[in-house]
Image (cartoon, rainbow, N blue to C red):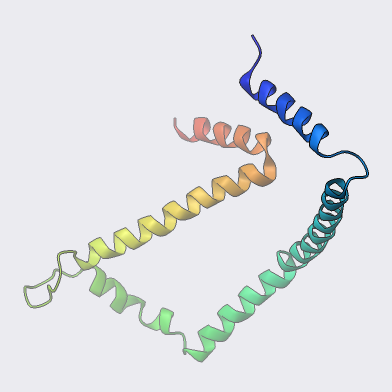
Length: 145
């Protein structure tokens, strides 16, 4: 029995050859579009190689250092206060909503970490292909013991 996808692909190829005859205006348009797309892809590949390399790492590090100095190490000096607010018991005067401070923190962290996991797996499979999936499975089996 023939696969449905194969039947559809064969039918589409037959229709395309009937509609797009060599030398017709449609064939020239398709060819021009393909050339334009190849050029755009080449430019995007060059930009991608430049942006997602050392320049981006350097920009992130410089921005982090700049913000650290401009804000006078606020994240270091106020860490104790942040933990105190996060874990202190709430009184009735503090409560203005239905979600506690700790609950709001957990929700924000779970959303951030969950999104990162989904994007990370998708990126790994997209760039690494089947090999990435294989090593994820190996890591899962090794860590689940």
